[in-house]
Length: 376
Image (cartoon, rainbow, N blue to C red; front, side):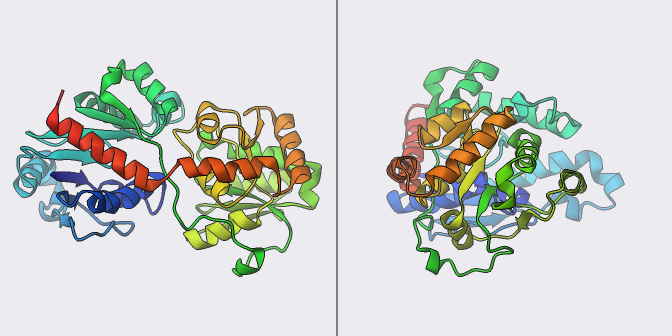
């Protein structure tokens, strides 16, 4: 079996849940099916390392913009030239699977198409993602999903949203949840030797701070929480924006909120093992990998009550209503009172066993075989 995977996400993300998905499952899929050969192609500069396996071939297609100069002369034919070169290098696709990492369509593809939908954030929050590029992305995503022979959704929440927005036949959809890396596990505090900007207890926030992530709601609630004088807030993610820095100063908490960037998985595991709790305040998620990582490390979770988090984590987190800051502050108080040795934490250590990248890889292989043997 042969598959062509468009590695666009590796040109877009320095790290993130989508690239992690493919980095985890593609090598595992090759281990599970010795007949599988994957061509992973890219057309530009990479922002992170590609997954490696003896059955994964990296194909670097020359980007046309680099060679068709001056751009003002060649701009009109760049799309056609890109399609021609891609087809020349990749082939017709007959008897093969096309699987894009981020909503791309092949040109004149004679094989089957599989697409993974990670979330419907751009559709649910179109008022926030309202640039011409976002509009174009929504249109391309719709075209990609409707053209696919099989659609993989990372959660039941995402499946419901896909059917709501696209009216897609449920028979074409397979729900395949994410897994969690083996690096995330309970570790003794003495083994977490990396330096931190504070020796105080801390709450942990991990990931993007886009508006739907509700980070501003978290810092506003934290600024009015009496426990902030004893418990810091540790943030893992990109550098502060100017607006974020201004907000922290206005709230008077710039000295209580610490930012860590370029954190690898071993350090992140240590942070989960040392944190008072992971705070996951999102208004919407397609899945929520930090929930699995925290549960696997025995870290308490304080989370907004949204469908995907209830689906992934069950009763393990301490929940609060997403826009109710009094509810969030009460949840933080309860997390401090319960500590790390609670029934919720023990339930999380058991629940996380339901999720594995091996299982996700096996189920994705099944989708490939199903699409090839019975294309829609």
